Length: 280
Image 1 (cartoon, one colour):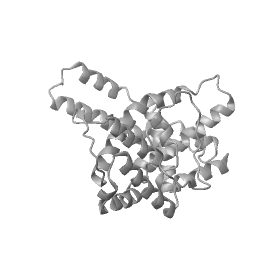
Image 2: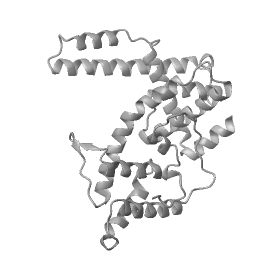
Image 3: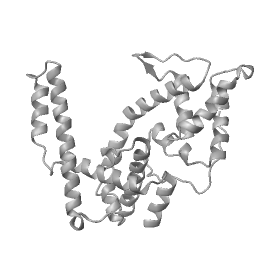
Image 4: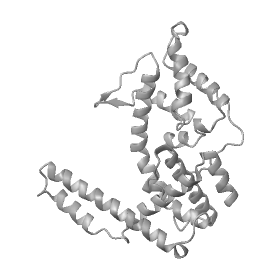
């Protein structure tokens, strides 16, 4: 059973092919709801809700205004997802893959905005957990054995994922810090030597942020009576060793620069993809 989707023209995603790619990774590499033209997005949201009703076995005569409102709710409030992700999330929900408070989530023959929110929150938590290993593998995939073309494709995908991460959360996760180097290679950012003072300022900002995080960790451990613990001692040492040349600082400062760049550009994913393609 498939969702009847109208596909937008001139909107695409660029991916790197990998063996044994997780379903969640495949699903997220489709076009986001927010990147569809509005009339097409609304039609697809209505078709999606009809598919959900069939999946959950909701009788046609039981369809109510709640389902119309759900289509509108998805249309207006869930642009960060792909339709394929939503479909996968509810297939996992029906299979019993999600848990709440340590117990399997109750599956019911009903769907509304509240149920939709619960399912997608559980999907987000599971995706974040299960894709960590996938992202680590993708980063490790950049090896000397790769051809220059493969490395370039990897770098471009990583840059697009960094921008997608920014659109979803307003920040760039450290998984994508190498996108900074890609922006320099594409000449969207100046090389370090030409803009050293500004980059060094970002390094200092990153150091201050990380030092503050370590102080907060120590306060929390102290509050919980762990001041004499091994964890407290290790956290203290890690924080004390931080300098502007630390790897953690490098990752964070590059993510801060990426965030500033994406904020200044103020583009959706389709617009940013066009900018990147034009720069290649």
